[in-house]
Length: 625
Image (cartoon, rainbow, N blue to C red; front, side, top):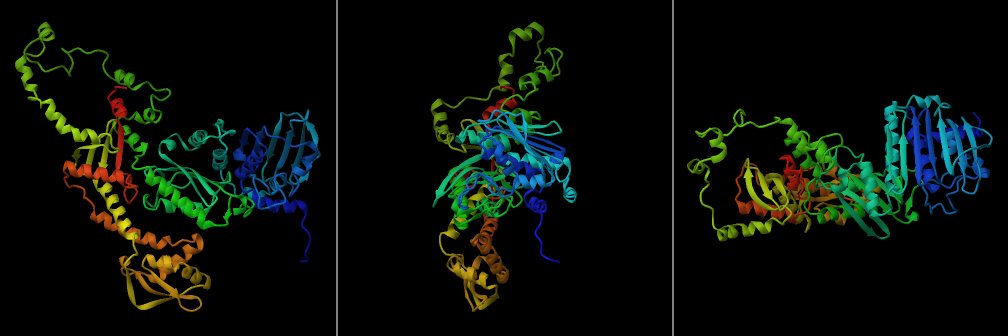
């Protein structure tokens, strides 16, 4: 078949296959265009999951009439200078609008601030319609109808209307987090509306927008980040270890304001939480990376969701170090969801009440509900809950009350003097101001009950001590070179030349962890020592795993994680067991160690080590609030 030039329509449809994967992709491109135009309000309307209709309206700068034809031409953009490395906008390729127009019925209606009227241009399956006058406010409205009607084969790969609507909602939320000063609304054919009011660009305003998207629980269970290294600035919020999700969908990352899904960032988050989360749980994070545009390549894929960093090791190290330092500085913190679960266990109506900090909308207050559930009046003579009959009735009961000899049965004995009580409680009173308070009791031979000035704390003694022993073992393990054992015969491992070179470059770091490795001719390495803690291990598999990790992340964390897992097992068997009775001083010593140990809010397996219930919540249970 001879070589021939493809038609412009076919070129656009091929580009659309990369840029426009589903309706959510269209929404992403159009919303990004609106933000690049300086919009402060973006409204999105969809129908049929976005396949029938997508309409995006903004109040941005608008497009002059003379530029409308250029706006729908390939590789035409107002956002890119001559320097491809200096990209400071969300869009820059000039492919989105012509790609969308090649597979749908597209219309663009726009008006600038300097114009008295608006203009409109349309495309139907790649065929451009002439520009005509229109009526519109300042800004731009882009309407996309019958998406993929020109490429019906693509429709077979679309999911149901609900799934496509959900993907669109996720895209809008992901973008909205990075632009808290912009108001977003998303309305669908199911009459549901997502509305994100504008906040300000301050840290507080940004956190309010995050709470709008990720839920009101997140701010109270998160830690702020603010770190900088070699020109890379990291800000945002990460969840405390006891506040997790079953998947990583609530991990948001932004590079120079651009939402990205980057495996390096995802891997750094996993590495930062490796010691404090179970394998099937994921942290909740919002990370903003700001750096020189020349240090990051956002032109990796037409969808612009992937990026490449010039120095990936720097970015990964910054994220891991900043998160671990933030978790250490935060001290011990229990997730508020643990208290909410405890409240719900005591009082079924607590979930709605507790989640809103008071009576939920449409619900009566606890006091009113409590009174309504009981009898309308109390008659001591007829009530099944009447006082014990002490041999008197009627007026005699009401006037005299209990006789002195009957009161004696309830006498608790003489109280200790004030001086004696002061001496006993002085130490405990001092501990009440500590984060985990003073130990008051041990129940079921496993749970320590402690009291602070404004809360009640329940500690799982085994889980807590397991974390303490684990951290101590890790500190001892990593504070000096790991003991190694010499192999009787060196293990020769054949590898691709590039993998062998990478391992040789990291040989000093590997030696600190007890793995002695050196080059053994082209495409091979010789392993002469292995960490003693590993015992008999599959050296071939270990080295190949390390080579793969170095290729992906330029780290040797695989070996460190194996050693840490052994330390975790040792900690589990060497910690205080459930069922062991503890003295008051032992319980208080455990609490003080928890306060001084980073990550002690969860055990090695990611379970919470304690739950805190505020005094106000306890009073609410008893109808005092």
